[in-house]
Amino acid sequence: MSTHATTSCVLQVGPLKPSLAETLRARYAAHVLPDSDSERTTFLAEHGDEVTVVVTSGRTGVNAELMEALPNLGAVVNFGVGYDTTDVEAAGRRGIGVSNTPDVLTDCVADTAVGLMIDTLRRFSASDRYVRQGRWPVDGNYPLTRQVSNTRVGIVGLGRIGGAIAKRLTAFGCAISYHNRRPVADSPYTYVSSPLELARGVDVLIVAAAGGAGTRKLIDGKVIDALGADGYLVNIARGSVVDEDALVDALTDGRLAGAGLDVFVDEPQVPHQLLEMDNVVLLPHVASGTVQTRAAMEDLTLRNLDKFLQTGELITPVPLPTPA
Ligand code: 8YV
Image 1 (cartoon, rainbow, N blue to C red):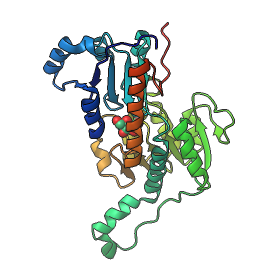
Image 2 (cartoon, protein in one colour):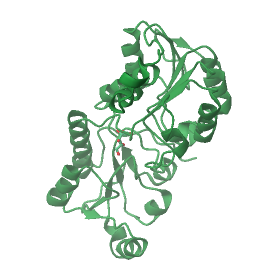
Image 3 (cartoon, protein in one colour):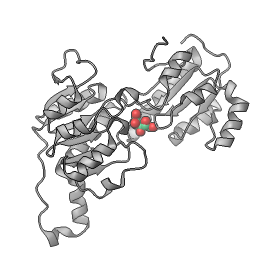
């Protein structure tokens, strides 16, 4: 980043962890972008040109329209590893830096992926409901489920999180293969050149790819059908990476054995058909949601903000498309 504003003004965009929002208010005298359209328009007309840095989360981000209304914006500091809600093309064109919070959440997100996989195959959540509903004494033993250890697992996106999932599942004796934009150098896992081929050869497909335009509906109806009636899908990435309608159809028709989902296309809305299915585990986007990890994400967010305010640089910048 070349420009570093001498007078800085921080803007909070979208809801943030309460302690982070409070720090932004108390320590940085941050403005908060109003929710309502009319108040937002008024705010941007009055203060848009003062804002030099935005702090937001992966759930909200900064789109091209908002970026346009902030002519002196130098950085978007994003709480979260995923930044698909921020228009990185527009940021790249303007020379606006974007940071995220990698590494600090890898373990928790990988733990969630493995937990979701176990829950989905072994139906622990469904078994728990069975006990609570008083069905055990009435209907007898719970039906048998699917073994987790020694399954064939395909990982879509072998980045930091995908790698941590693979490492955990290796300890379960799982055979790991993966698809990535490029093969990962020195990876012990088997590279497969497309999600379709990957799905054909595994029992469980775990989606760990970044969201955004490049991965939209990467897991389409064909990939889901290739996974087949004995196959399972686990998604801890972004809802947009999976064709959700095709997933619902396949589950409804019994063309897929089950799914474990932490993310959805239109959060917090979940397709109503899924709510009725016992072969589906539904989580409200909690993969990084532990006290420890969220505190580490908050800390890294503030360190990025401080670094930008002091030097015009970011600690963990994301790669931006270079303007043509
Ligand atoms: C957060 C996430 O829940 O880091 C991400 O990309 O999806 C989660 O860790 C989210 O970003 C917080 O807004």
